[in-house]
Image (tube, rainbow, N blue to C red; front, side, top):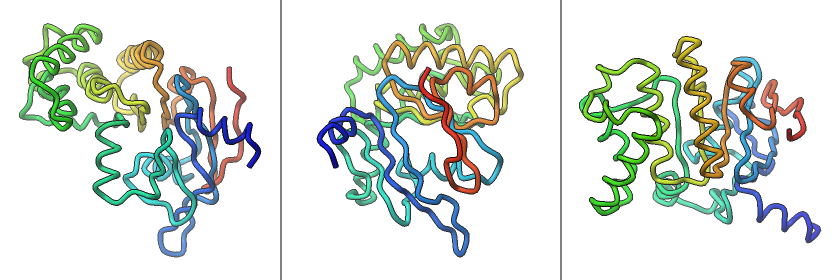
Length: 234
């Protein structure tokens, strides 16, 4: 590897190196490589079954590739055991799901606070961060509401806040507007774009939505487990 290439890899927030993932005889990912810089938003697009969610799971350490590796900053996920991967997910990754995955018995504020509790952050700092991000997503007045009392758009805003409150370096989003109407979806996308810009976070977003892909700097299109097209950075 040339020195310039090595320097670029160190500067990248995320480097995916030739990962392959098989389920039985089926190859779901076939030697996929990509890089994402800090502050860059990348959309993973492609038809159902093209490998988008499997790639997101490998990036997030939820699934292990059969070959290849994922580097998050200077951390090689392939070198970590289960406990190490869990620690990286807690500290460095935020995840946003299509169906929100909020705990129904916890309030909006308590759901947002969960990542900070897992990091054993002090009470006063937890309160400060939760209050600040509730204000930023426009839900200070809904802090004590249970998820069942929130609209879909409000639930996804809480989910975004939960994904960002611990200040990760990488955010992974799997169809974050797939369960929302067009107006709520547009509002969520605008918020996601603003918050990742403000914090300089890398975002990898799986989507079928043109509107969601439009907030990203670059689009990577997969088909049959391979990258078949990449738009240049904006």
